[in-house]
Amino acid sequence: MDFKIKGTELLSNDEMSQADKLAIHAGKSSFDLMKAAGLAVFLVLRKSWTWRKVLVLCGPGNNGGDGFIVASLLRDAGWPVRVGLLGDITAFKGDAAVAAKLWQGECKEISKGMLGEVDLIVDGLFGAGLSRDISGIPRDVINEINGRGIDCLSIDVPSGVDGNTGQVKGCALRAKETVTFFRKKPGHLLLPGRLLSGKVHLTNIGIEDSVLLNIKPHLIENSVENWREYFPFSQPTDHKYSKGHAVISGGSEMTGAARLAARATRRIGSGLTTVVANESVRGIYLSEDPGCMFRPLLKQEDFEDIISDPRINTVLVGPGNGVTDEIRRRAIVALRMNKATVLDADALTVFQDDPNYLFDWIKGPTVLTPHEGEFARLFDTSLDKLTNCKVAAELSGAVVVLKGPDTVIAAPDGRSAINSNARPNLATAGSGDVLAGIITGLLAQGMPIFEAASAGVWMHGEAACLFGVGLVAEDIIETIPQVIAAL
Image (tube, rainbow, N blue to C red; front, top):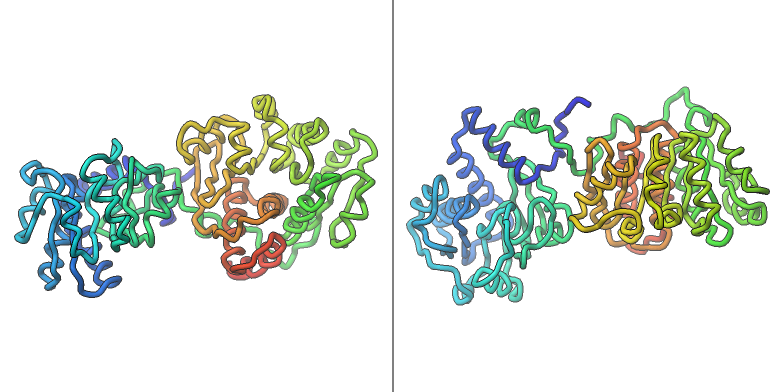
């Protein structure tokens, strides 16, 4: 697959270092990049805060060098500024040492005592690639800053946050704002890094986008730019049969889940949607949604007979279905027929004793949509969320949507995305069923599988943003037309 620059790429710590090296190889001065970074932080600071007492915390790496540039710019602008130094200034090397020599003001070793008369912290202590847990005096200072609630502007990432994973290394500063450069890192979007970063400013320091043609990153921030060209916008020649036919496997007790999924499938544009469930619950499924069709199951084999119809191109199994041998069989039938298949909820849990049996059947386009608990029943969770999800996609052969406030979407070919527009109001019963239905409806209309999963997650979050407080699952569905119109 050809790499295209979208502007939404996320770079790991190593990839960002590679971008710096490529920019330098192309003729940029490394110190000019550092000066540009310091200036970017200074400009954000001046825009977000008025004149006040500033303490710039500088570690011995390039983040500390950026901090010295910021301190010098603030001093020249007439701000009261001091520098707190971690370690011996004679230990600074390279560009950081040059930046340190430019500073002519006060510079003392960091301690809790220097926080007494400070209105704003500029955090240049530790970079995104911190390799060990923070301890000792730096830990005490960070905890004191957080405890006092002093405003903090972090350079690149808040000190203590792993740029690759968003995880905390011992402790981490809680920034009100963070300034990063060229491209965001995964740690800006993954929890808890996203919460600790505050408002993230992505700034240009002179690195050309063309360096990405060499790096070819596989990770993106999920956004419209990544999948808009694949979205199945309605065309004048469309009719209901050209917009796909999705089947939703319905349960007999928790019928609300499949009903929500079916309504979401229709609302996102599926031309035809049929719920397949036991005859005994026909009335429940048809009572509120006359536009949704129903096919009864009189015997086990009926599910296979129904979805064998070549006009049916997408199947969703799981929401409210129950953890039973029958649901296990329905999932395998859908996979065996090579239909585009979405497995959610009970259709995942039912394989917890033998997940490899499920994976062996995944040959065609398949999306798994587990929350953290369901994911742990099928996959290893010993690593960070992003890595866990990527490994799960490779192992299973499916696109995996690992749901949460920082949902990760990963494909077996190595592509992955982190979603960042989810809001707390999505924590409501049925929200996941609606998401499964949205993805099912997009697949039914022929959208490529990774793009369909990514678009479904983003639209789900965007609907919640547009609706606001008081959201219930049904509101997500009814807000989808607004989301599509805005596209």
